[in-house]
Length: 151
Image (cartoon, rainbow, N blue to C red; front, top):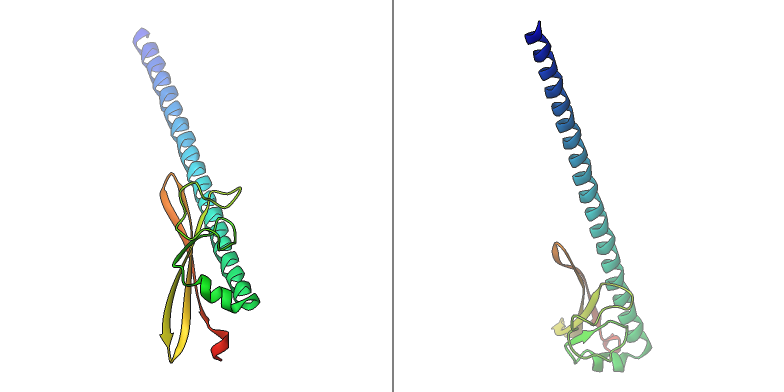
């Protein structure tokens, strides 16, 4: 009888260890799932905000062209601008410290020019970028402006 008493006690200990292992695995899975979900949610939020900041810059450029077309064309002669604020004051690419105030985003404008069907076209590319633990990410918006005086 002693032998079977010891055997039952051993099986109970094995069952407890197995139950603890299963509970631990469930908890680890829930933590991993939660962490991944939070990370994906944060990335989606940042991507949406970056797209918003890029579109905001495109709208600002449109208003600049409508307000003062001649000044806009002169500004387009400079290739790169840092748009941490919506002005043509920083005629260069942004440094890492030049981010949109209160955000993690860096916004840059690149102008290029071409002639299509005899009309001068100004191409504006806005790149809003940010870095996180997964690396560098970007949202890009591109638009073309024609010289309204050529119409």
